[in-house]
Length: 275
Image (cartoon, rainbow, N blue to C red; front, top):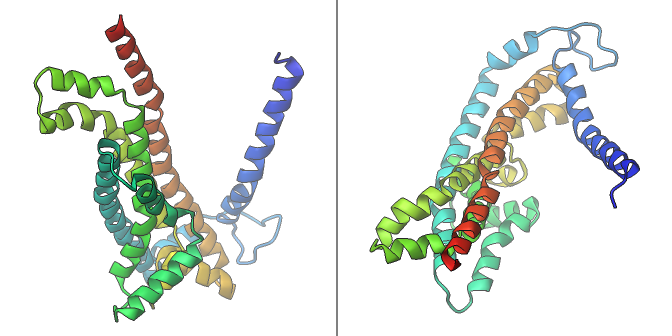
């Protein structure tokens, strides 16, 4: 039986976890408005000039543009490959299906440094120069899994009675996909795309091995911190990245929150059919 003490204890524990996650981010956010070049506490005053300095820095803008291009291209590839793989594995049964699914999701479970080293060896073996497209291929290896997992989870939670009812009413495969399957999974596809873009945008380990001499925004920030240079500008950039990353993650969370509704509506439909 849940007591008042249990509820208070769980609430306190949840607050401690949230504080553990957010206090470092809040400290960095405050440093982004530090009026001094020296990162010390307490800060002597507040200013917003580091955001202007970061925005007018050509190196920062070039790195931001490269990150946006790489993230967009990797997300587009992931949308096509991840969605097709999810539809195929959910629709058909074949020998080795479990092994195929395992091999598909394994790259996201591997340490990024292993994936990066493997991709670098692959590109060097085939004599491929490191460029924007090698970054895109590297990011697509884990973005595909994000989209695949989102779409497959939604398909498995969507009642099969919808598809059976469509077939009973005379719809062919394309019509069933257009009017039943796609509306059921479209929010999962969008959510997977947003999450994939967010992961690609701030990826640093795989990018380090596939970018060559190019700098994405995370690589640029890493270089500044390693050299101990422009720390106030780095804090301002990092705060902007947090805000940019938080938006697609929040939207993705909202879009996937209707999974339960889909499952419930499916169960209700099945019960009404049986009745």
